[in-house]
Image (cartoon, rainbow, N blue to C red; front, top):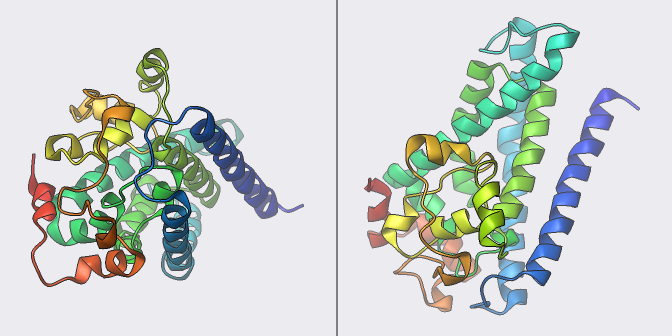
Length: 276
């Protein structure tokens, strides 16, 4: 079996294992009652996830993956000097940490830049927050992220293997912290020092505009602590999910959310994107 094939098997295993664990947690330790029928909500999000996957395959992968190969051959990036067998693991770990940190920065950017927020708003108008929400992103947002992802690869010096591993770990982390899971206060408190947790991300998806501008971490939870964007002032079960102007289920149907970034009328919810 080739190294690329092994890498693909590992990536698939990581994602499927995470999905199985998250689905079990959501069934056994549910934090919030559903607003929409689960079948309707889940189907809509999975359709959007399919569109997103096609977008990544057609727009992002043809740019980022060859760029990672080129950066590795040319010795570009902050981690390029970490060569040799002994340093390979260290380089991969450093690369994953730096990719995760710059993803945290990108998350803040899509909340602050109005035209990016219009696309990211599609993710936030979901009335139920669960694992499927973590896969629900507008294709326009993913396409807009390609230059940032390319810059991450070049500046950090991400190898194709490290990039692939980070992508798999990120999907696993996103499924977890978007999940409708209630963990004990003690577990949340300790785990939040390491990972973004369901409570942290439920607060980030709150209708409260102050809570919305917090908890931007996607993988490691320490970035919010380091930058003062951490909020843990509500239990996951107490948060009202969504955006204030989009609480009607008829306003978040598949057609409406796909068209949402292109609506000519100003979106008052988007005003939160420029907040502190």
